[in-house]
Amino acid sequence: MPFKKHKPEEIIGKLREAEIALAQGASVGEVCRRLSVSEQTYYRWRKEYGGLKTDQARRMKDLEKENARLRRAISDLTLDKLILQEAARGNF
Image (cartoon, rainbow, N blue to C red; front, side, top):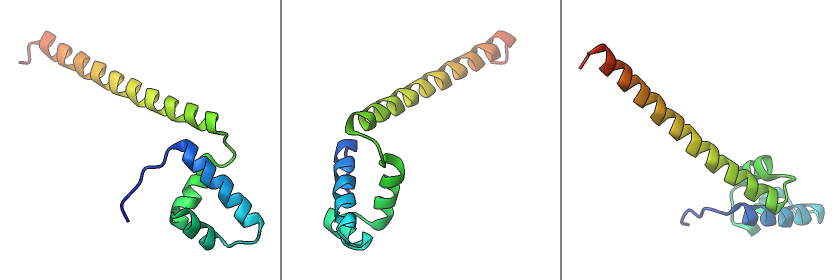
C-alpha cells in the first residue's frame, strides 16, 4: 500500500468517523481497518488533532509552515553574520 499524506481536514473527518464507530461498540483495530490506517497512526492523529475543528487544524498547519520559514530565515541571517564577522577579522 503506497504512503498517502492526509490533509488535516481529512484526518479530522476520519477521527469523527472513528469516534462514532467506537461509540457503537467497534474496537480500535476494526476502526483502523475501516479507515485504512495503522493503530499507531490513529493514536498519533488523535493526539495531534483530537478535539480540533477543521478550521483550527488548517490554521495550526499554516502556523507550523510560517514557523519553519522564520526559523530558516533566522539561521540564514545568523550564518551571514558569522561570515561577516570572520571577514572583518581578516581570517579569509
